[in-house]
Length: 499
Image (cartoon, rainbow, N blue to C red; front, side):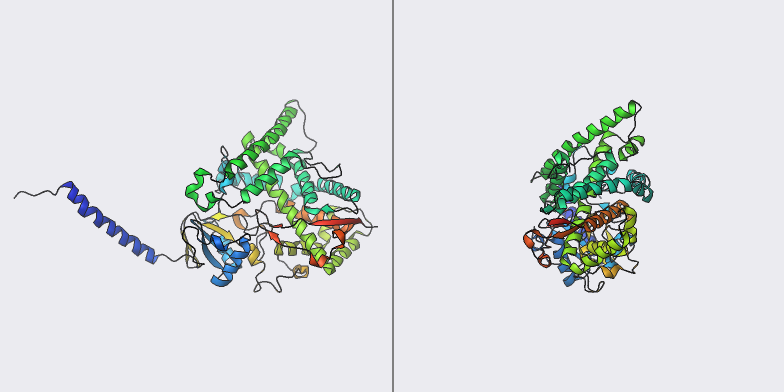
């Protein structure tokens, strides 16, 4: 019997829809077995929960967590964002499943043409590649180790001494504390990396020059809400031009770095050497090429200047508002020194000062969400599904203000850290200003020394008041969200030299 063959068009009409229906059934069955996303607010079409976030997303997310629980998900544009807001959920992200969530979500504005972040980046390297591990290990052993940081004590003391002299010249005048501290930290980094100052303190005002303005501009642009981050499908269009503008800043910065590097290469070629080994010497000795040095230098300045600056600024603001705490810490400093020359070695002998710094970091962490992470693959955490590619945030600001973790969390009480083993090195998940896990801030040793020395010097040598006799208890401590959590209004003080 002759077998009849169905024509191809008929096969397509009958078979393909059948396959489609079967696949939908299979996918539906698979989806029904998959755990749901963490709970969260129901978003609007297209924009998701963007209208409810506002200018202070760390506070908005904290309010969501009070409603939906410590592990939430929100839709921002087309992107799924998962937020951990308790020590238990932070532990899951930063410790239990650290490998899966250690991938960095790089802001689109920071994706500069010609910059391979996986090869050159430390802070913004998307993946924990072998290159990233080697670079991090090098920084931890050669550049930012306890030994290396201790060897820089004389440098920090010298630069802070210049700050004191500057304030003496400005006695009785209004001083922008944030701008001054930024300049000091910037010059410390300039000397650690290049063995030279990059900001002038000799005149009546603080002159930051080109590099300071370029880095400030780049940080502002990267922190600007970006359509390309909310709708990755539109990223190639760079609709706001942020990537283009940041790239321009980066290229101008590289011009400065390249000049300094070339100058050092010529010095070494002629048999000369820097007065002491600095970061640039280490980079050159390890065979780093021009592009690596340019990018790493930029990252070090961005990461090391703003974070220290805002921590000192917030500490001074809280101390001025809380006069009894100010009195105690000043008495401790005077008791320890007893007319001895002030040096960094005294800082470790000031437990109340260090408790004030911890309390500042608790109430005002420099990075309230840390830096964004991304799910490497779809995974189940605490009974919920975290989809591949989701942005993952840890709201350390909310955790540090959780009343179930902290007594009277909205009050500035350094005493809570006295006789306590809680530190900021990533081991206590109720207190994570520098993160934890693979992505813990590698600069903790340097940052902690700088903050303590600068703050102690400001308190030891000067009394402080607000301009025009303002009431310190009414000092505005409104926050401004960005890459770092700043005061919305600059902190303006009038210094008076202590007798």
